[in-house]
Length: 297
Image 1 (spheres, rainbow, N blue to C red):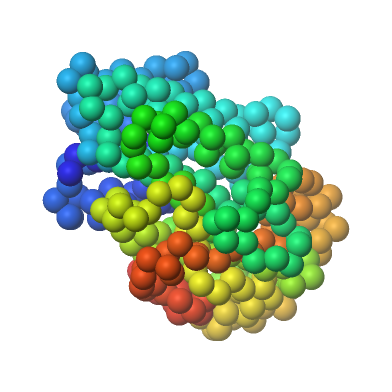
Image 2 (tube, rainbow, N blue to C red; image 1 turned 180 degrees about the vertical axis):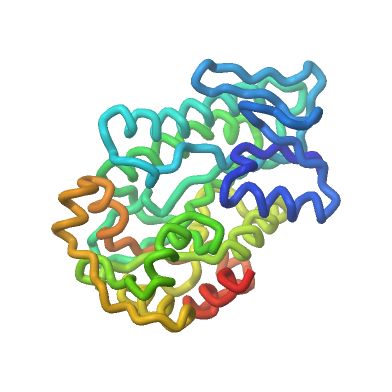
């Protein structure tokens, strides 16, 4: 297969490209600064993306988007987070539709932030959207793929939970404090988080590429969400460190504002009904096992 990948240098994109190449796929990367002859230049902010007149891709894995946790959610930053997802997806889908033969499958990143938070309800792929900034971003992000789906391409909206990796992401930011024995629960510690190991992310992407049963939203999370307190204790056991230093909710809200309330302090529960129904076998089903797996790599 010839597969186009955006966000190829990111936390998810790097191992996915490596896996696809090992499987014998031809991987073409979208990049603002192409470093290989086969890479394709794109600049979503300027609307630049030019394919050759006879270009063809069997599949696309679209992961690009500005990091939601790399700065305060000022009005300007929120606009960049939204535009990086919606404008980039809209541009990519329009250009793919202009090709002589659009791709057979298009996997587009999204997030479980699509769902309501702090309700105590576990959401599956049929649950309604929530309110707030993250929910509105996810809804607009997924809506940008509709024209491609209407054109006959099988579109899968990958609603990622918290991705566990020792190389970055949320866990990567926590590790320095926890390794010094200075970690602890966030807020009350009772808020639930839907997580998944990076090896399972790669496995889900590979499965969705080849299995035509997958279309529409797919919750990319492990079967059992965990509370923040459970996560903290599990990480402490894996690292063999105490976890006695809590981060008070009021302090996080004061410093990080809306970002803390919709991410760190939010009770977010999702279940991978579509994956389970289709028989996907998780590599890491328990939280402690997943943490031990990714931190040993």
